[in-house]
Image (tube, rainbow, N blue to C red):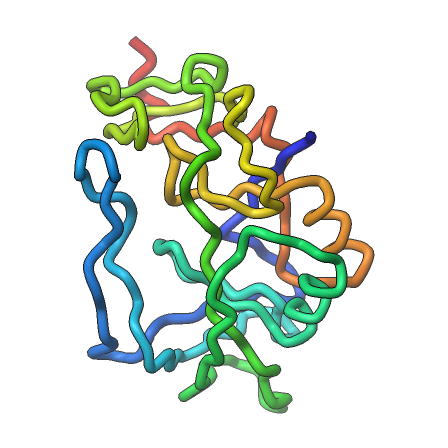
Length: 212
């Protein structure tokens, strides 16, 4: 199976972002079932109310926030997801749009949006094959969490993939990875603001000055 990283910082004609309303409800962050360490950020609880920021010419079918496990998808994507039998996303909770920030003079109504999150669990990254470097290596072999310096690629560990089309892997819980089927369904149906990087080249470097 070929995997891709779903990019969180897209640009283009459908460049759209969101932020939660001020004072939104939060729950505890998820914890590792083995070591008990925190995995990801605090949970976003209902009601789901957002402010959109539209930088493109049209509202995107995917809408992101700079950091967090959740993102928004349109009614169009919701229909594509179910009609293609895709798996791995949970939630699909209706979202209320409170305000839209944009420089456009004529603004169409935003589509119906839904909050989703990609599932986290069995699928894990092969940290050695992915070229991970840390200040201190992970102490827990389940969540594989540690302060990262860089990685060169995202290689799924053989035998861990749970068969889902979208998932957050152990070892990089803040990243959404998807299958070829997921990518193809988005591209064949014109889903906007969805950009994918092949996992084998999806590297990142937090400290490019530190190559020692």
